Image (cartoon, rainbow, N blue to C red; front, side):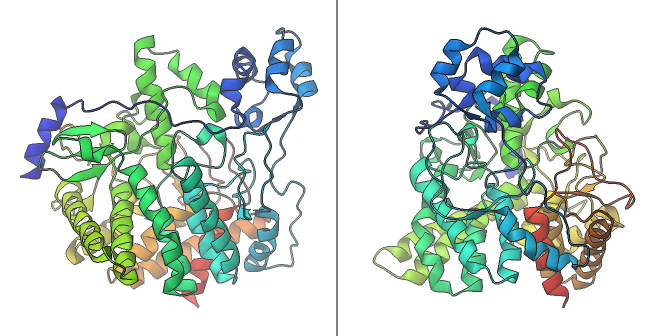
Length: 521
């Protein structure tokens, strides 16, 4: 019944975004450098557009811009900016160490101390220490941090987990949400909302009462994702919220800006030149929404897996995003009930009801009983994107949203189609994008492995974990490195695809390796 009603969404434009969030004080390269920013990014002097947005102006940006005349660009940049260096640059692996010892030795190299305010840096300063992924990723990243925390807990570093949670609570309080990363150019979007899962992980590693300190932040972040929901009539959309024809609420990925991403400026700008000017804003919005998903980029978001210009991310209801928000609703409900202050029971009941409504909507819309699998859904038509199955189908299992029989069928499909020699493959399409076959990614491995385990398939979970850890160890022995992603189809190849070379470090790989290793002991 719900699917039939969703057709009404096709005619509902809904409310429009009121614009980008209020910009806090700080250096924003794309805004503050004007034509100089465009010229540098388009010049190709830096193969990675992220280099220039992370560079620190040596003088006030306005003074630099006033002196810019457009000649000898490289010399001008080198004389006016301090260029960033990769995290842990120059670190040499001790080949006598095991992989686990190597990971433990990496934590200090990947940990940043509390930041000092710097008006000439795009970095948003954080008051407590935090772990960065490594390589070109010199700042904290939202969803990465949950999987990094898995390893920190195993190494007894709950103090660092707490300081990272305190930083995220600080960002929610000061910025209004947890941005993609603590950079000014990331402020217009978030990433998959794992904050509730982080709080739960910390509480289990310490004690339940520790979660209560983050209740206000959890509710404030939830309000960010649900912004505008109270004003939506059935069959309307606004920012990250979709109100279904029956009144139920689901979410999508979004970004408040429709311009090239500063950290990938040249790639976005050049691609957009291939389409009419009036179509570029929608393209940029979909590019940015894909970045908010963390899966940038994947055939999952593309009508034509060979053409990034066909991104339709804002048109989709992602099954993993809504599983995460289901978990957040249940977490808030449980913490309100646990605290037990006046009015908490009423609020707890409201959140628990919201979670159940969301759960039923996800099952009705996203689960296909014929194929036994969860899919993303086009909110305008209610059509499942069944031609592009992905490992995101495991996330409803990880967060306990699926019914027992649904979990059984999803696990069987994952075993049949997605399990490869090195672990679970991200999609079944080899598009050349990094979030596609033949690559496997640590966060998805963890959620798929533990998801099927929670639905009675410990045999499959153990087999997949053994393959993934075997690939991690093989790569470590051969290269001395932990990398952000791996080719799980051909174990002889290094993972590729995407906008930048495969990075070493690597926060979430380290965390998942230690987490899976602990479960196998």
